[in-house]
Figure 1 (cartoon, protein in one colour):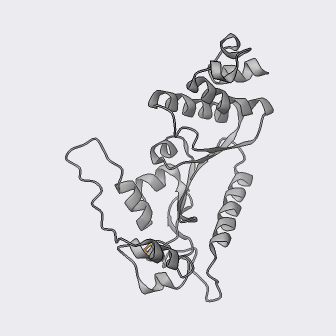
Figure 2: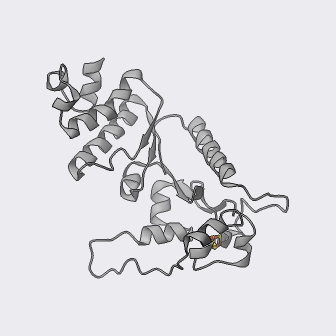
Figure 3: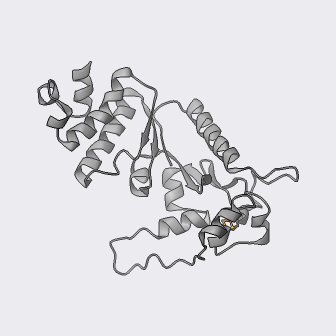
Length: 235
Ligand code: SF4
């Protein structure tokens, strides 16, 4: 079984068996950590920044291992990252958070190529591109100090103080999700208030950060129940 798990991550038993961890390279240890869970045949692996500390070639190798675990062993991944490029590369469904609440979610390609929430637009437009004719990072954004950021958490959209499109309604309560595109593409932003789903009812209560966390976990849980394998979720 251990040999089989090593094969999944492209290693041979004689390379690592009977060696102590300090006798292995950092890359070997990282690959073993990614492949080891396959021994217990899990349905879901939570991977928190699994490629944040490795070089580009090892990053590609680890992402490839994750894709093989998904395709050959039916293992799903909850992939947590700050790196949009790898989320784009391996994510099927993506949730983008701002201050602990989901700002936008949907099919990874759809969301990253066609962002709707002002925060997500800012985030994606801030990514440098290797083209000198394209300007980046000059999107309008308002600065806010820490105190302003803390104050808004309980009184509406958390991006209010930095949003170039903010409106009075944005301060009333945390915006609900509105449908903004195909494949259940949702954005929590009042700019889309006229869209078909998510219109707030007068009885809606603004969720606390803890409520928002539970809502996100429920949404991910429901997604996993519906699509138990062959799916990656990136946040
Ligand atoms: S809800 Fe309002 S403040 Fe928040 S992102 Fe949308 S427009 Fe901006």
